[in-house]
Length: 430
Ligand code: CAA
Image (tube, rainbow, N blue to C red; front, top):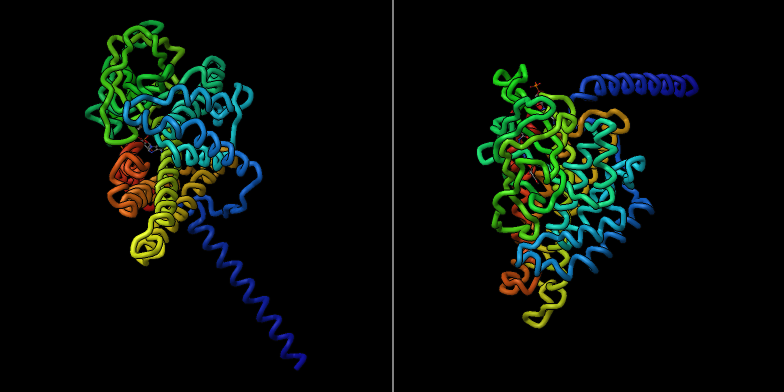
């Protein structure tokens, strides 16, 4: 019997050895190139700090943004005053280090802020997401000291509002096909062209804008050859805001064209290296797609809550409609899908933080998965919220019709759902 126990222990040691060698093989094979890119686990415990942030933003959204949201939507009036009030709480600088006047939050908290704003007012949500993400964060990552000292404190305080301008009439999805050009003109670049679909276009003061530098050695050789990022101020000579789009949803968020007519941009305003702008544009989108995913998540949450409230109050056939099985099933699916999207959004935010702080692989894949899932979830949940409210859901007396219209854009901007699939498939098969 003694010999039997010894043999059992030896067998156990052998088995553990085999498992450890197998795990090492799996790690070597899948660890870095595959999915998940980080190979790590996320902590699901909600920290006290994050709870405070989420309560604070929810309080702001309900007391300051909600009362004007429907009216601004009707009048297509951007939430500039609401943004200034929000900035006074310190949130305009949530991606900017303290050294430049910011109050840098962790990346999951950043997503929570956009989610909570969008639960009430998706137009304010995207205004903030573009300001803190596409504009401020891109300057944090690629700006030189002088640029950071000049622009970041003003962006952090909310004194200036930021925007990002990549797309054009003929190049939305195919971003590298842009036709805006920059020519060397001594101490300046002279920019010409027309940009399109610029969120915050009419009210922003500072733009991270992309154009191709004509004399660059890669210009005309590589598809994105010469693409360069510039920091543009709204008062630069030759710069003007063009047409404002009349949109289906997020009508309180302004979307405009920008006109570059011999726009003189000092060379010191080149962001990063000349000719390396396409990488900056793509990296900025990796970061900001998480913001749009958070916006979509907020829309889903807001629409679900509105449907739940109505379903508990509205009675048919002698009981609240929530107690009818079909409506109960809708609510169950809305809540479940929203929660599933939330996990992907927070996970992408966490992967982004791992990338910048720990040098983990780029979060391109996680960001696109989160955006794809959250966008489709917002659309599905908002559609069902309208259905739960029936005829009332189809009127402007309830917020669900606005969520329904607002949800659609999350399947289109910052890369269509089709492009997210391209990005995901490329990352999985590279
Ligand atoms: N980070 C850094 N570099 C990247 C990158 C990333 N995520 N993705 C690609 N690159 C690099 C590649 O490595 C490649 O480098 P080399 O040429 O040196 O080898 C280069 O960029 C070109 O890459 P691709 O060949 O993959 O480029 P592509 O032309 O095939 O396009 C694309 C790729 C994914 C389709 C890209 O064009 C894309 O993302 N399109 C969608 C654009 C988009 O999301 N626009 C939204 C605009 S912002 C917005 O909506 C505004 C708003 O205000 C809310």
